[in-house]
Length: 348
Image (cartoon, rainbow, N blue to C red):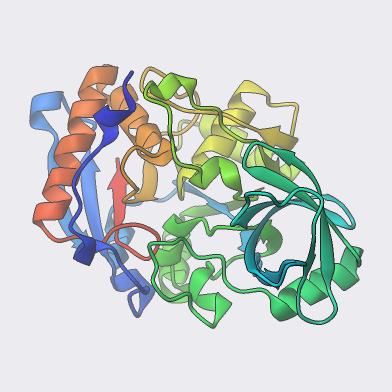
């Protein structure tokens, strides 16, 4: 399967630079994929209209991971500037990270504000290991004090208020990129859904390099997913599993929740650990019934996952790829907003 099959052209002006206010006023592209291929229907609504698309007993599964200010700006021993994007904590004083620039960085010490320093103690391809001069809660506080919102490079100006790059239900600190499909939910909308009898469940997958790393391989299957840490409360998993057994719709809010649920479907006794699940067209979904997601970058693992889900719905992987291309062409023509702060899609 060629990576270029997932390419599309996007006018730069359709890349959202900030969230809509209020957030549930973003647009919603509904894809009814319950019918045969030739009868698939689109609807163009607003996200608050999702209330009418959900029913009593439906289960929305949210990723409650919380973004922390993972971008640090430091100085090399030579005086040159360097940018650090923290990825995952390995020990109380040790993190993996991306460095920009990274060339020639092994063994050097980076100085940050507040007398914080880190030594580059290892490297695995583009991922470096940093050992800091502080650890634990003290290190976390320093990172929170001097760090910046780790927004993607296509967002020209990172928000000074990290809450703009956070879901309203974010709880467990650990992500370096937001689970952005959840951006569209407001307290008012969630109260309406709760009153309707929609069930809310919260799982945790800390978004790291696995989610946002671009696919550079010509053949998509050769891409190596990096592992990301997850955890699910046993009672939560029991409730979700019971709902699935009762035939109720399981609807992950975003691709991270989707990957976590599919990971658990294959390994139901492992409620915490690491997942590198890579979902491509041809994958047979075991657990989810519908999907809420944003519009993703060309050639990305996230776009491939959505195409795979459409292929499962249509019982034909090739048709899933064709359909995602049609959907994205339609979204561009209708001038939807794309990427992290952009509009949403609901695949029924």
